[in-house]
Image 1 (cartoon, rainbow, N blue to C red):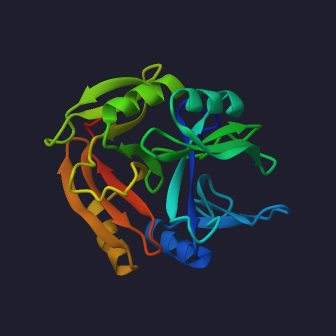
Image 2 (cartoon, rainbow, N blue to C red):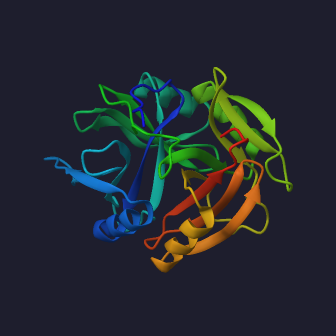
Length: 265
């Protein structure tokens, strides 16, 4: 599998998991996806775990770190590639978003910051010095898609267009409502939909969910359940393939999909 060494600005380039129990998270994802990992030791911050495929020296898939504090919920955070973190931050605040973590060094590897959109969906941005991000996106057991669950998808379309220059394409992936696909220079970035209707608790923020490519959605979901995950949406057929969403044993949300070979993802 060829490694990805460069990401276009605006593309999802990395993701990491904030966990209250590093060892439990490592066990779960190693068992579920066959990942390995290695540890980056930092003087000023807590250690950072890097998940890989095919052994510790294999291509990188994602990261893992401890929760910042007890008020932070366990979650996967999606990172988008940018040219200039500070410039992106100004675009976020001008569009009505909020700064959550001010621009800072991400170890010796680049600059990072975290923001939230108009509805409180958080995301991170990455300005690399060298390594651009995950080395095998859109491959089995790696991230292949990112999706925004929103109450106001029209507001989200304006916000992310202003911040990242994304353009929208309307899709019909679900029968319930239109689906927004985001692109930059014709390349797919991710999608979004007004999933969050009156049935959702009002205190739940909009959120980004990473999708992981699996070769057998049903088998992977039931394995996840055996390992302690909670199934939120059981394996279901949609136009791009067969997907499901789960909450992992420490409380982080993720989705899995077995793509339809004839579908674009």
